[in-house]
Length: 327
Image 1 (cartoon, rainbow, N blue to C red):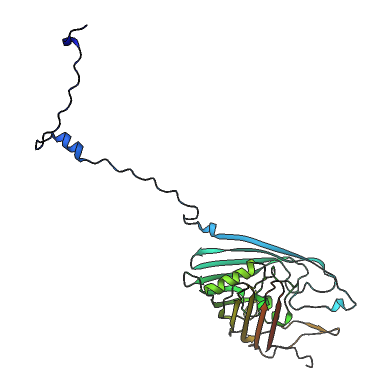
Image 2 (cartoon, one colour; image 1 turned 60 degrees about the vertical axis):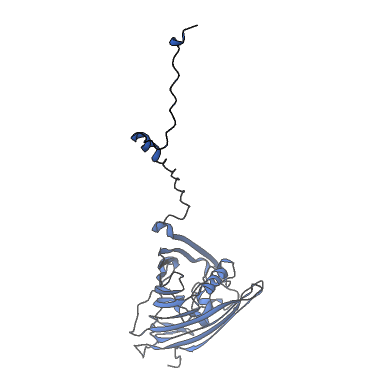
């Protein structure tokens, strides 16, 4: 055994502090400083929370319609439709529409819409499938709910329910001449104010997305002015056409939709003095009113949407430039 003096000494245990006695400075500081609280890691950002880039707010879509025409009967060569030059003798296969749509929101107050058609045939042309502008407009919203807006540019004017219905949703091949003849190509350059309350806006969207062939959101009330000569045509007088529009999509307790409304427009229209063929003879009408002829119409519609059976009815009356065959 080693002597006790050779054994290593045990470490000295600190004495408990004496009440009232002062502690060394370094010990006092070490005991007074609290331990730093743990810092929580930032939560990962959810998809969509980060602000989107401007190009993420744009969408590109389109559609094409190919048609085959074959007249049945001996008078097929005389078949004509003012709003559809594709109808007639010796037409066979053809591209009726080929369109691309670029649309999106620049911000919460401005939306853009641009649509060209690549299957147009200009008047007097012997070839087809020209590119021609259909829509180019901006929607300017005045509130965050987007209930109040002004549409500025070339767009559909709110006259006639079927005129406003997109060609990709319409059941019939083309629109009825009685209303379609009031607005050539259904479009013009103008500015129109629309009011779409939130409830009606949701119903307009549902009528399109659910496959019920709705005409889209053109407001429950609309009013504006436009040139009056038709899409892609120069203005030929200093007067503007005025248009008013009212419609409402009612929804019953069983989910059935019923839309009722009316439209009207008034202005002066300057016709084009083009050659006319009647009964084998050809002549060019004289324009006796260079500033334009009275052009006024009123229309009403009632649409009982097919769920599963429906009814679509429109009525119109008015007056406008007419060809006086007697002269």
